[in-house]
Length: 96
Image (cartoon, rainbow, N blue to C red; front, side):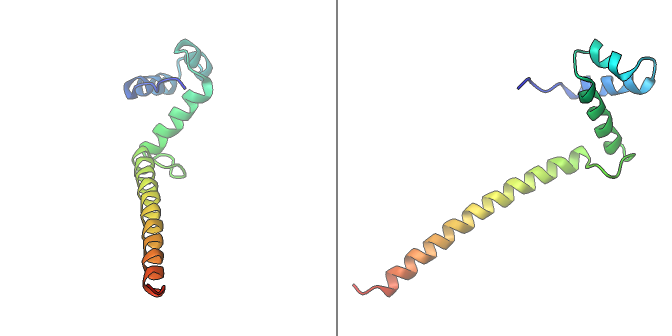
């Protein structure tokens, strides 16, 4: 997987596309990226600027990713606690 392009590169590419002096396809080809990539960047920029409310902003995406990681960690911790409780419950019930 190629390394992600820096945010400044993305911003400048979106600005070029929005200027309308050239088509998105030509700009994408000049920048050696795919047309769909540039269109995705444009859509994300619209969401970040509040123009597209149907799409998550970059901050919301980052927060969602962090919450998913935290949720997964808590699920693992909960499973460990359940197993420990079951182990100790068996230990107290069985005769010695």
